[in-house]
Image (cartoon, rainbow, N blue to C red; front, side, top):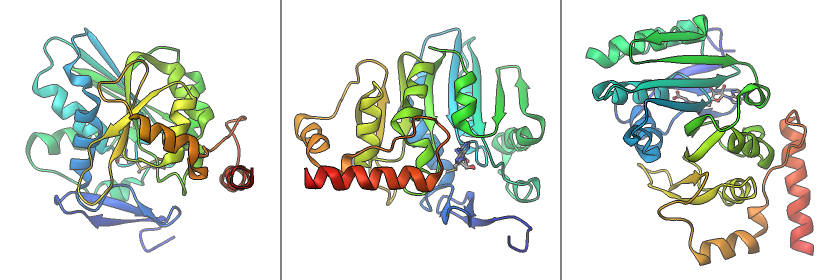
Length: 274
Ligand SMILES: C[S@@+](CC[C@H](N)C(=O)[O-])C[C@H]1O[C@@H](n2cnc3c(N)ncnc32)[C@H](O)[C@@H]1O
């Protein structure tokens, strides 16, 4: 706990937007090169979801955090709804306290929309003319099991890093995401780690690279179905060859962080020796 009585403290990123640093995870919620830009480019635009010609667009957001992915998605959508509605489901086990969220703001229309999004952790729901946001509190591994199959047209996968938050990067959690994805759904993530890509593939996704932003390395796009630019033969061979491509496993979807990390370490060692 720090002086705000929480394990978070605010940091300013290079596009001027604030992020929160979590002392529990030893990590900020966003890239320092631009928190809001990360939401917009790595998730909203990379997913292509707002180009869909459907009456209702359904998006799953894994890790509400301070709600920037939700903000960027709603703001972009509201610019050109074209008679469609947007339904967002967001999963979060540890919402940032209101005292910190109250210190974050934007100018103009974005600021007005964010004032409403900031209240979602308290109310659980935001209903707007153009669509809605529903927050499912608790461990995403339990929440995801309550979601019906083939529902989402995009999934924004945005936990902390795999090494710090492995419970949301396991093959088993990805299988659940795959189950909730509609045909053609695109999952976006900032991680390009080998174990993430191999885990997504084992869960059924087609995997490709996502554009990089700032100092962060390229991320990953994963689709339920074909992707315009899937990984090439060399990259696939690397995933088969390298022990580091050993994915996280969590069959019960309730394993402790340390157990999940240890299991991967021993599988990697076996792969090196075998
Ligand atoms: C990098 S932050 C997300 C940033 C967020 N997408 C935004 O736009 O502000 C990761 C979030 O995942 C949440 N998280 C981590 N593990 C979780 C779990 N097992 N279940 C639900 N949420 C989890 C954390 O509490 C944190 O808020």
